[in-house]
Image 1 (tube, rainbow, N blue to C red):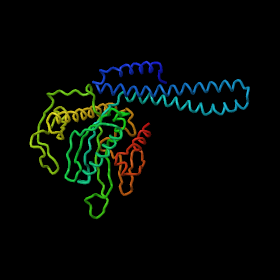
Image 2 (spheres, one colour):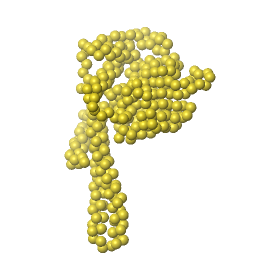
Image 3 (cartoon, rainbow, N blue to C red):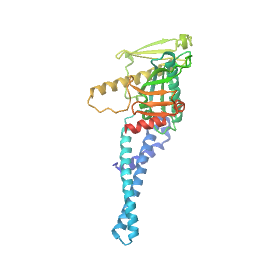
Image 4 (spheres, helix red, strand yellow):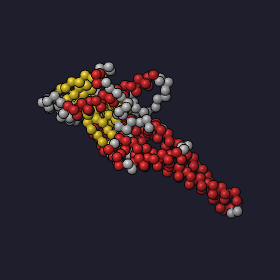
Length: 353
């Protein structure tokens, strides 16, 4: 059980910090304090509810012990069964809130999402565009901010690859990672492509990587380890859409990682985007190395799937989306592709717990 007196003191301290007008200039710090305030409020409210319930239990015990009114004693005994059951539930809730809060201390707030076309040619590229739209709509629903860091569009309106970041907006209730962590892996679509004349159902794939966005202190890059090249940004079909060399390619020499960005019209913005992608990929590699060292560490049944693991199938003819990790199907595929991912995410969260 949490130390409620310590939590109340911490809560009062947070309120004092949040009232500082200077804090508005440090938005990242403001978000962190506000998130923590919300977590502490949940614990304080649950604890208050538990204390009120304990008072009711004590009152009923007094009635039963007195034994003066048989009918009242009978009612008190009946109520005690429900109150004791509710007390256990509240104690479990408090324990879970406290554990979840501890976990969130180590969770990143923002993510970088990379979607790549897999098997299926032009249809796979269109599917990448559909997944990007799905996550964009989901981000809007959750009041997240989105910005595209790099993209390689195709003539039909899809993407060979698109990389974008998602971060909590001012009104966001939860951090982005807590929801998006379940989306990494291979997504498969079964449908009749727009280009198919015979009406045959095709199967195509796209891989999604969800990379935690590192905080400033997590990844340090030596500028001497970077090789930076510029080139002209190109559009569908390979034609140049920018006469000046504004696109950026960064090679991290020690790891051999290569990242690019060409979505903005100036070099500086593209360089910032490319560096954000590189930092996220270096953090991913660092975490993979740490995981391999701790071979005996228990891994979650769901968590963050590897890039090559098939996690979900979108079957349009049957109006069904199946998540293979929890062996569960969801219907209203059009709604899901329009960003209504809440029921799937909730089921994955529940299964992991």
